[in-house]
Amino acid sequence: MAYDEVLAERVRKIMKRKRGVEEKSMMGGLTFMLNNKMCCGVAGDDLMVRVVEDKYELSLAKPHCREMDFTGRPLKGFLFVSSKGLSKDEKLREWIELGVEFVKKSPAKAKKKSTVKKKTRKK
Image 1: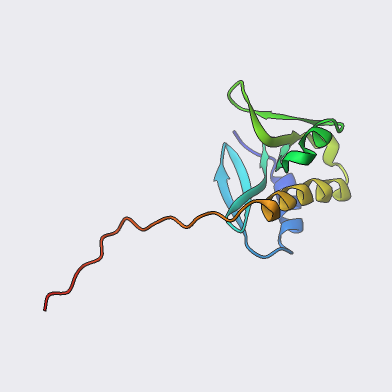
Image 2 (image 1 turned 135 degrees about the vertical axis):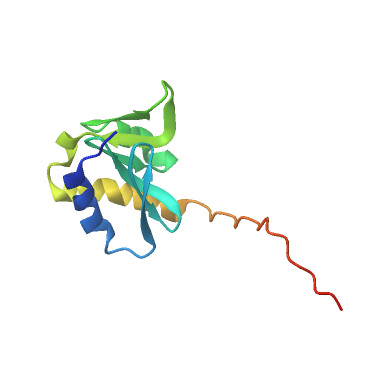
């Protein structure tokens, strides 16, 4: 699935002001990682946003917003916002800030243990 390059560029413009941002191709679109956690992304013409649990239902009730559903089952904490809800940069920024809030309130990820065996020195 291709994604809206114009929307991706608008998101980049907002996200570039933040430290720890990385872009990754994922789920048929483009995701924006903040401090190694998925914050938001672009899938087709929609913005994908991660939302903290206590703001999920309120956010879902907003115009042009729906549950993120790839497999027939909605992904908890993820929303899609259609392009109609993103026509103004201030609206896009508000949605992105919800994703940033998700990252900031999420517990830190545990570092993965290395599976590479260390060589022991022979004496």
